[in-house]
Image (cartoon, rainbow, N blue to C red; front, side, top):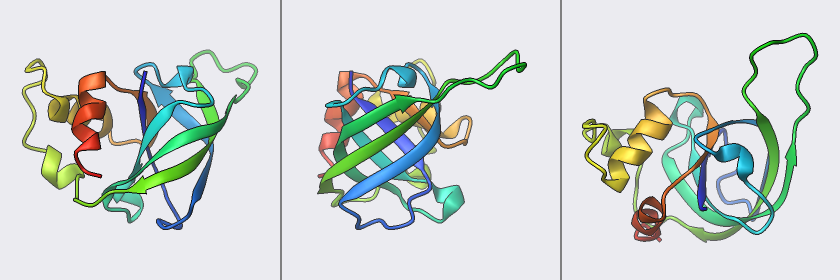
Length: 136
């Protein structure tokens, strides 16, 4: 399964991204070493959306806090960048894709990243990964 991550990216040109304790949703907790990941620089943190494609070099689950009943699983990941995006793709390009059941890759990404605008790691479909590959 391919993955996508939306996070605060301090150095968009870095060859490696280290992202500690990232929230996971939509299967994101299954991310593992060797998986392909698309990196989005969070617009709420000053980023511009789709930034890079990479490979997970390290994925470590974060232990849950004791005494807290409901917790979203978190994972710390390290990503080796393999390509930089050549075209923009972010909230402004995806916001018109709001028919949640239309089955398009753009709608899937809008739903998973921007319906609830928190930073997170998500599992994406092969169709969404193929769509994102077109931006590199």
